[in-house]
Figure 1 (cartoon, rainbow, N blue to C red):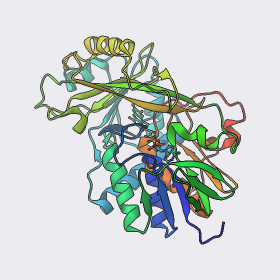
Figure 2: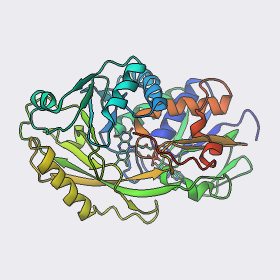
Figure 3: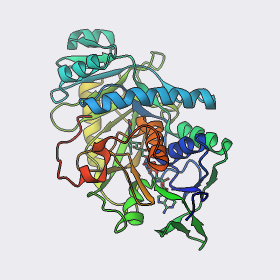
Length: 375
Ligand SMILES: Cc1cc2nc3c(=O)[nH]c(=O)nc-3n(C[C@H](O)[C@H](O)[C@H](O)COP(=O)(O)OP(=O)(O)OC[C@H]3O[C@@H](n4cnc5c(N)ncnc54)[C@H](O)[C@@H]3O)c2cc1C
């Protein structure tokens, strides 16, 4: 390994693509290897809709969302792609701690309103609310497929070498071995391999226990497709947390609503997942739509699956051990931070720039901390 070797990034989902963009923008030579074709649907970053928002029940993440939005605007401006759709965000439910979310938004200077359930129902007909409801305008959806493409294209324009259909099989001694036997020498390796991270790094880096789950998402037709899309919603009633958002392209011509449970996936691995939608989840989500979303037709028009890779606390995992950087920002909420993840990786590579929060470091994950992020 020499300082003139490139940084090799394994994985071209949101995390790998954003790392490539951030490094190439700093004139660091980069090679990205991705085992599947462009726009594949086997990992965590496919599809047209992820929630972006400022609201969290956790001060650290409220702060990070601010920088993430600044960087998304840079990506949009540089690429010309319209990645964000800003419809606002709504948070409510018995477990959501609306007062805490509102307090944290106030502390960060983020404009927001706290509404009674009846006021919210009058403002957004077709949704049922209970308790206090927090609305903030700086939220909406992010198009994950468009984002990955934009980030990779920007990286290539700055000299990055991006290779699809190219699997890494082994990482050792400052080099990445590929499935065809080629060995890429690297200044350091960024492992942004999503649900595959353990198969590449187990034994090399002391990872915390990672839980891979297959999640299911459903698209429901809107009864009035001419109405403006509703804000993105995080609803935490008793039982499973549910989120829903405008589906974008995946929602078809009528922008069907994407509705899913956050924390109810089936435990699997990247190798064993079957891509079959769990009928139990479908039944619960249909029941949810019937109860809370009378503005939707409660028969899903389409459905799909996706992988979460979760740490025990749902904090991201971002750290460097010698010449290996582990970059696992999923836990079901990492998409909105993608360009900031790239910025953190760039700082781990160059030693310059925004420091990675302590909570994302391996040592903190190993410390036995158990309190989960309030998403
Ligand atoms: C259903 C669902 C809904 C979500 N909703 C939201 C949301 O609303 N808001 C939000 O902020 N976040 C959300 N997330 C989380 C977000 O999508 C993830 O945080 C993000 O996509 C993780 O990206 P990644 O690059 O880490 O992983 P991935 O997208 O899985 O990328 C890893 C890549 O590495 C490649 N790879 C693996 N092993 C190798 C190898 N050996 N050689 C070469 N390539 C390899 C894989 O093929 C893959 O392309 C959601 C996730 C899911 C699944």
